[in-house]
Length: 111
Length: 113
Image (cartoon, rainbow over all chains, first blue to last red; front, side, top):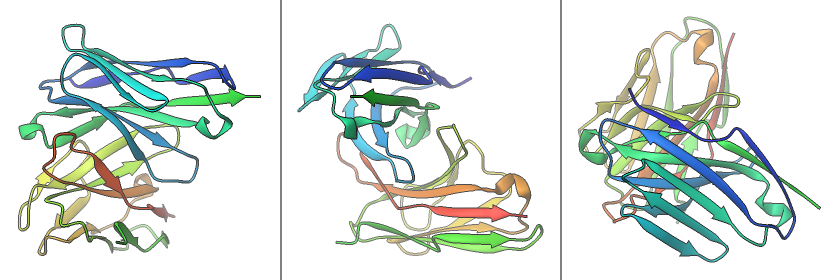
């Protein structure tokens, strides 16, 4: 079957670094994405990895290891506004057009 | 650009009633998707479309139908609503770019009593 696993909650202090892990098991794989969703809002795209390695976008970085079926999102210099849910998502089968989302990790940033 | 818009924003239905949710995008995207999100859960793909006139089933298609008669619109229909379909529904679109970044609409909160 298809599944993505990520921690349900993470708590960190403002200014710190936090890593959110994601492991996946899918029938096909085209890439791993990360989305952010604030309460009551819509998901917004953060990053995408198709190949192994680290992608950096400002304070956010994302890593992928295809051989380990594993990726993570790294958030640096945490700010209160980073408190949100973070979802990993895999482009799966169907020619890569189907996207399967994890259940999400709720990040709480404390002052 | 309005991006992705959804109509309506809120709706309450009685069991057995039908309704159509409308999604529109003005970014000329090829791909469009319908998801549902339940409390504490991720997004589950209902149906998707890779182009005008085409649709395909996602993870949880039962009880829903879709149509993509025009490239910019993607309609989600509930023929006979059930309480289990109480959820927040998100529409998204994406292009053929490398990242397949999906742009989401603001969501429709549907309650079936």
